[in-house]
Image (cartoon, rainbow, N blue to C red; front, side, top):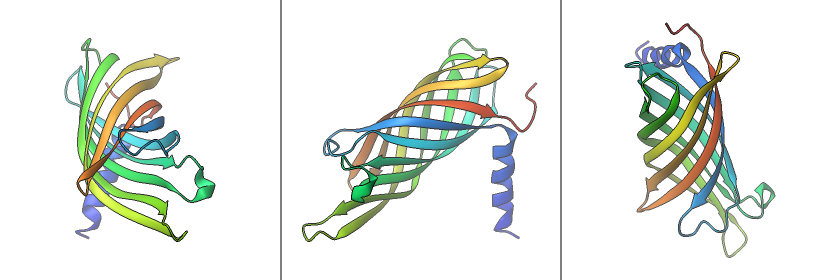
Length: 177
């Protein structure tokens, strides 16, 4: 039962106010020229702390195929879990916002082909930092989030850095007054 209690709490937290998000991203920095445009999917939940701000929790999955595509068997995948603070600049909870985030990369793997033609999977975990900005708006009373973020995953003395452009649609399991 003790192991189930945290899982139940986390599920309840995400059900209060969550939204699904998709993103298009590009790895940047040294050694990233061999990767094509990546994509990701996320679930983010937030708890309002004021009219202008929310504490956020996000878990996602990011995929970056090599230039040869997924058929080559090479690429990078990561699964970051992050906590953030989203502040809307006009103080209303909608409009332009900034959001710093920090967390941990729960799972990461880079698949490469070695000199003998054998596939090698390099697994990694590490600290995640992100800085984002975006615009919260509604269309026909449906809330959306258009965002841009820079994220870095630090592991084994190196890092994976990427820029992401995303759009999300809130999925609310309750009313926010």
